[in-house]
Image 1 (cartoon, rainbow, N blue to C red):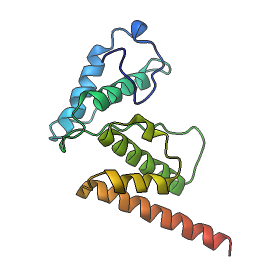
Image 2: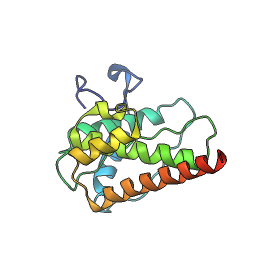
Image 3: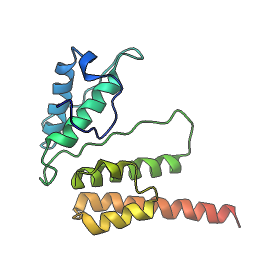
Length: 162
C-alpha cells in the first residue's frame, strides 16, 4: 500500500516501523479477493495481546478499500467492525453492526471515507444510499434488515413508555 494514500481506517503503527508482516497482509488480502468466488477457507489469526493482529486487518481493509475497482459489481466489499468493550443488548449490537456494514458499503462504492463517520443520523445515511447507490439484491437485504431492527427497537421503546 502506498504510504501517502489516505486510509479508510486509521492505523496506529507507522509504516516505517511496521515490518515483517507482508506475508500476513498478502494472505488476508488475497483471501478476501478469493472469497468473492468462494475459493477460500476460513482462517484465524491467533496471538498474544498487543502483537499487531488488529493492525494487520486494518491494513488489509485499507488495501481492499483503495486498491480495488469500487465500480466493479463483483468486487470484495471491505468492512471493518470493532467490538465495543462495554456490554450492550442484542438489539443495540444488531443495529450497530448493520449500520456499520451499510456505512462501509456506501463509503466503498462512492469511494468516500467521510461516510464512515458522517452522516451521523441513520435516516441521513439511508437518504444518501437511496440517492447514490445502485440497489443489489444482497444490499437490499441489509437495508431491509436495518429497517426491521429499527422498527423492533422503536416498538420496544414505545411499549416501555406506555
